[in-house]
Length: 177
Ligand code: BTN
Image (cartoon, rainbow, N blue to C red; front, side, top):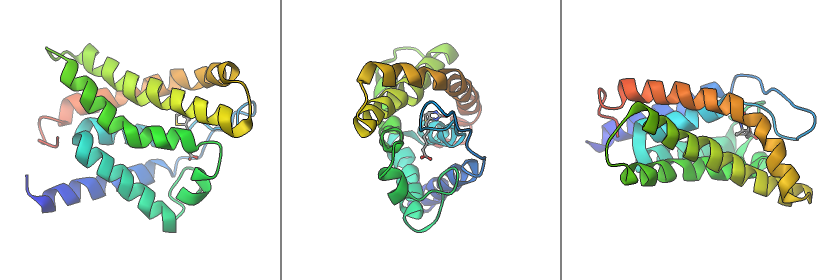
């Protein structure tokens, strides 16, 4: 895989993450974290590009965010890292590596296994890291913070399903990862 092709792939993926951030946030009121569509882009980056290029795409997105309001609702990277949602974004950065690690444990591929791995790394891991950081940020107990994050599970599970289906269709075909 030549480096120009890789750079184009990672830049396009970073662009897709920015575009998904144009979808307005859905505030929840009882938790200072909105429902967003942008994490679908993170799952796609991890599934389609793998650990290195997926992480690079997310890193490019975060670097862009130092200068431009690329996050959902028009936030920048420094604002997000200073706020209650920083833990989720840390989870986003870890997700491609976590998914690649989980993939190595799988002996035979199956769509349900792919979905399970996406869910574990892109939903469970991200939401747990986000909830732990949120508890720390708001000085709240951990268990209620974890429980309040259950609100994200249905939507994030749908995103993981969509990302897995897109991944199954295009990952091999495009020889992305
Ligand atoms: C930001 O733009 O400040 C980051 C928002 C993070 C929102 C998290 S990602 C996982 C979970 N699912 C959602 O839809 N929202 C939260």
